Image 1 (tube, each protein chain N blue to C red):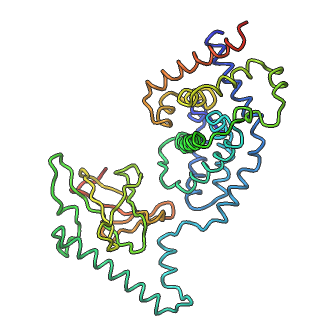
Image 2: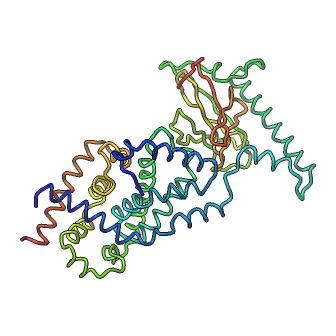
Amino acid sequence: MKSIDLDDVLRAALRQEVAEAAGGLDDLEERIVFELGERRPRLRVGDWLRQLIAPTRSGRIGQLGLVGATAAICLLVGFFAATHFGLDGAAPRIQRASPLNADGTQEVLFVLPALDANEVAVVGNFNSWEPTTLTDEDEDGIWTASIPLPPGRYEYAFVIDGRWWGQDPLADEYVHSFGEYSSVRYIGGGDGA
Amino acid sequence: MYIGPEEAAGTVYRVQDEVSLLRASLEGETEAWGEMISRYKDAVFGLCLGFLRNRADAEDITHDAFIRAYVNLRRYNLEKRFSTWMFTIAANLCRNRLRYRRNHPVAELPAQIRGGEDPAHVAAADDRHAAVREALNRLPYGYRAPLVLRYYNDLPYRDIAEILAIPEGTVKTRIHRGKAMLKQQMEERDPS
């Protein structure tokens, strides 16, 4: 059999095989759309805040307590970053205080309080939006990861047990796209990553 | 219906429309995702069927691939070709299923590919197609997968390399050797 014949036969055989077997796909769209509709959508920042302040059976006092606890954790994170990285209150940008590596990168600390989380990761344009895991070795609910990055502008978000968390308190700014927030940091005064 | 890369490159309207669908899907409009499924389900199913050589598994993995892609859509870079990303997800799921199968072997797998159709009828209708299918069943996954992506999905070597996470040179080698193995098996089956 000539090579060109084999190419044609292979192509035709695969297409015929799919055509014969594809009957089970007729309503695939409907099934998946229905299934996705039944699923609880991914919790977004706005939804989370609305849930936080909405009255529940446990009462508004409990909710306010939760808000207070969250604020306390944010303060704790700020304190942690300041004591570990020598921040001053006027310019809370931990990446600018981090040491410069020999290859020109800077150790950028990503830190997030998540008391009940099992898994926390950071995704961003510096890791092609593939998760880099944060660790909480002393199990105090503060998750951290240090990533060496060259100067530039970096968009990122945290993923807490699979849920998107785009508003890092330590970010320089936020961007809003596709209905979600992402955080932005400028490393070494860079404006493009 | 899936649009191949060459066709897609010349169909600007269709590509722009696809980006709109993806943006709408990211906003949570599942109907937009349903339209994306309509366009790609044949291509994804063909990939899965070619990789797995089993109709029921291919249907399962096609379903799971579209669910997983939707859940992880935020990770997709809109500047890249959607088909490559989608095929990568499907290929990884197929690999996991094959790994599971290795640990949970099923004796009658090769026969399941034809579904309810009479094998004798298929062979009579086109003996050469049947011979190719049987040869593909026996081909190792490492050679079968590039052949399916090349000859069913019509992908360039570069995209196949990205999807299978192997170097482009390896893709070319495996396609060349895979075809030689197919040819040998077909000749052994039908020496005339």
